[in-house]
Image (cartoon, rainbow, N blue to C red; front, side, top):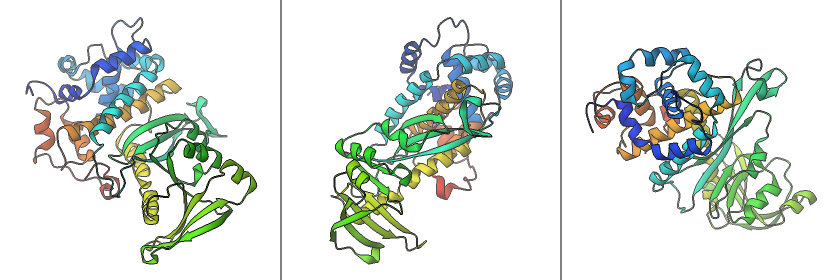
Length: 390
């Protein structure tokens, strides 16, 4: 690559600009816009995510400090706090949501060959949500409780590569189980969820679409055993049974057979009862699949700690969703860069840390990211949160 270009400009080479233009045209994002385009807005917000800016004034001050380099970074419009605030309020957030989905599609193709650690060829997803707390007086549209506001980020995570394949942003009052109605279902795929999604009518719809699920039973879930299979109790398994639901209404909602797997975690001595329609895999695989659901929790912790989705640059619903989708785009972009530059020895945390201090440097991006001279102290939670260390 040309050594005269900034690292930020080289990073933009990994973004499909033509797809972004289509997203803008779809929602007429640049209609009656004279100077500060949707692309300028996206670059400013991506810069804020990469360099950990805390406010619009912070973004303005940093970018105006190097005006001669803005053009070479791809930012053509005049950067000001008021202009960026207006763009966040008025430019349709779906532009950035659609663009993030395009990046997600690219990343999933790159990570499709990742090892899952189980003898399964199915695509495995973990589905869960996280709550982002807000101030009720500033975000009245996101009412959650009497004195509290919040939004929920519902995420379907592809466990091969920890890439979010589906994200929905709702107010805090929306119950998690309702999002099963919007879930994109792929026949043959496995969906791992906690017991908050235990709705037998919706799970049966998932079953009828020839998809598999693994979830936990609630303590009051009544079941009747039809027959049992032998298990190796040294692995932590206690039973592997085919059951039907005993409650009249539950049986009406889910009339088919279910698989019940009882498991004890020897380390914590916690007892689990799993329900699934996955009959062709070993019982221990069912238990391991549920354990892998923890990856989506790590994803939520990671983006909250290393990207800007807890402090927002605007108070409207449009501004909040725009910022969250931009953060998702930056996360997926870093994953794409890691794979395409073959940075297998670099964690995602390290890549973002290096980028945060080298965006204005005129060095080849591969040299910057792979140089042994770039030594950062690992994230103190790296043992738990390394999503891309293989």
